[in-house]
Image (cartoon, rainbow, N blue to C red; front, side, top):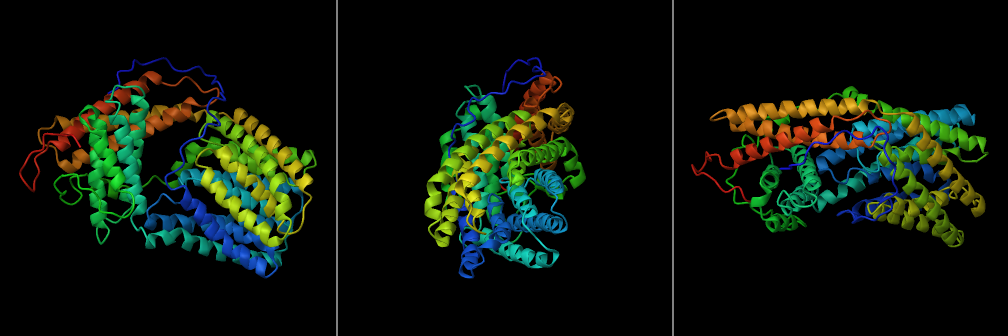
Length: 562
């Protein structure tokens, strides 16, 4: 456990740094899957439109096709639902945009509607934890649709194209289930094991142990959320239960890092790659779900949508105001495509101002580099329409393959792709496109970031207080059960899982609040004390579970080492 001494709260003014903003990370383990899915979803509709000589309709098919970028980390049953909601959300945004475009050509009205749509899309994606690429793709498509000439009679046909492409994207997203039906849950479990191994390698006291512990609990919590979305009975239950035991061993490692062999955890994680047999931990099989305390979790219901949306109000206001002002500024400068500035602003807003600043720098660097890349490939793309389509597909793959390394690197491919897509309806002068895109990027980033500075998130401090209180209550509940001579295993495990979730949420909430601008001093001492006491109680609960008499064998496992 950490022995850090509580420190005073940080200064109300945060320093915005450039350090590490452009640093490249290791690529995502499944970087190629969104990239291939994107190409597989976009290519057939675009090539069909090319064959029929109607590339001008590609914007509508791409609205549906780009939905294939979502939900790649979710188990397939959950992915099916998420992708369906994303497709419906995309169609809803496009429908509002097309109706608005058919009723008015007033650019100020169009920008205003685009900003409102961006705010709604941001709030709903964050509340629903849709994940990357979040609201950006939705906002990009709906904003572009606002500025596409439209009549009411054309709307049903255009929406039908988007819906057909959306169905195809859904099929593309679900296709890997035919090859690796348990892939997402195996990956989530492997990530939990690797994160626990990283913490165990510090022995609980080495350099970076606090951040490694937080990352470990976050990975374990994500693994549980993934496993709990799977059916508890039926053909897939055996796989789920085998993975549950591995996640339990990751929890044991987090509780007793000094007694853990990190290489054994890494070996288990490595064995989960591919479709081979799930490694055995040597634990006796659990009696149903009672041992893991899952019954209580399965009965729990997520918070209502309105409760999840409440804390996101400042971010939604930032998004709406920033997008509107960026669009208006672009109009004032006489730029022909103000939605580019609007989308730039929409892409900036993250959990706090510090992260928003980092994204603004990444966006500007990536877009300006992308403009230069467009200058290099435009002559080739202009040779024939088929080359135009193929260049867009190659850039689509590159964007998804590179964006996990760093956002700016993916933007280098996204920018020329967006510029080439504007030429599906007809040739555009490259110089004009490059100038407009560069100016709109700078305007959108500057105005969007200033809006984030103006709209402060005063609720961040309140959320930290609430998270500390929730962690203290979860710890007290677990401590009461530990004080009993023979607590019910299901009750103790449910309390332990609740405490782990509360501590994970506390760390995420404190990190988000620490990056806010002009925020009030955070209760840093309470946060540190809550984490220290909570992790001690959590470790004790894990040891109690690992050492409890097993009902099936009558034996007692004293060694908590994985």
